[in-house]
Length: 290
Ligand code: GUN
Image (cartoon, rainbow, N blue to C red; front, side, top):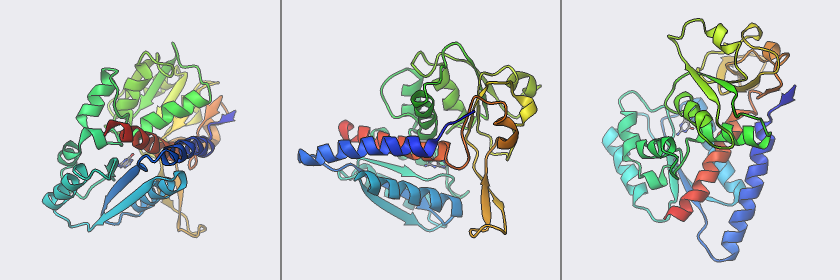
């Protein structure tokens, strides 16, 4: 079994980006600048956003963290987005999800200038992805593609099963794996909560990407020998023995599935760091769009 090491791969990508940034600076070009907006103080979201800002520092980007209170109005948030859209110093920005219930996420996503939408969530970027046009790919699916690419996983003609149809992971992932690209050309099955006989489908899969947010959902009896497994889940579960008071669990029962898999991502240290690497790649690309 080979571990798909997202931490190492993301560090390799960061190193490559850092070299490109140094080159930009040497030639007197603008330093890429990413802004991240966070609303409220959800523990996991704060951790993710801080990790994104730290990654910017590591590669030599400028970064701006904008923290808004949980009760900020939708209008105020839209005003902030408008300011970021019109700030020439900001190359790309993200609004960390989920947002509080009183704010309409779709409205927020639509308000982001697609040329600065480095999370790749805007309908224009999702449409570009479907049409094979240049644009920003959604950060987590893009990170998974990079990981499969760097480990030289053969995908062409394989059966790929995606579990979960979220707008930010499952749905775009299913589209990317079916595209006529190096990582792609799979026969994709997108499964979800209404899927019948899921185990029959997963047992035929060569590649399984699990993104439904249910801890240890994919078990050993659901997969065949030699399967490639990518675990997008990252749920905090209480654990008094940990200093933080919690540990992180994925959507895959790692103990069982790793015994049968040819390749598998760990949690943590798998997909999470790759999402950040993609965000940095997208931000570098955003500089050229301006
Ligand atoms: N919430 C969970 N994943 C993501 C992500 O990739 N980007 C943003 N903005 N919010 C998220």
